Image 1 (cartoon, helix red, strand yellow):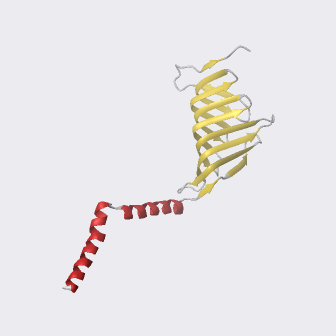
Image 2: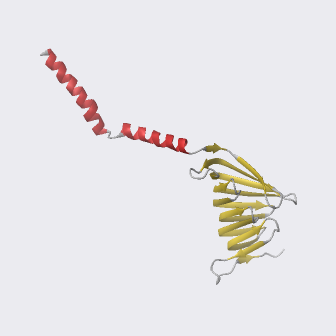
Image 3: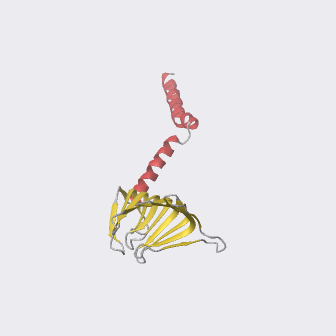
Length: 190
């Protein structure tokens, strides 16, 4: 009887460990190991840079500095970086500083073009510009802002769908997608 009793106890332990416990908490062990493997794959397949800084000369001769909290290299094209919590600035010829912030950006290290998106904010002296997106093309020296563009200087403001700023000539062009609509602005008396 003692052998049969020990075999029965052993069988009960096996049933409890391999059948009963997994049935009351199904997949917990397997799920955790799967999550770890997924995270390991992300790290292995992508290069991630913490607090990177990129500097280059723009067409107008000034340096543009781009900083971010995190930069993740694109798997298909290593020249493309996805940036998070982006801060860019340039010291202009007149001694002022233009600052650009956004939650995210896509930066091409080869062409040096950058697309900012998600809460774009540009500040220079007493001018504040906000938009959904901004795109800087190095070859043309054009900074194009689009989507809910708001330009504010002191108490004056303009609302537009798109603003194109030539960083070399300093010319601004405001436009609306719908030609029937007009750029809206308000100027206060000085």
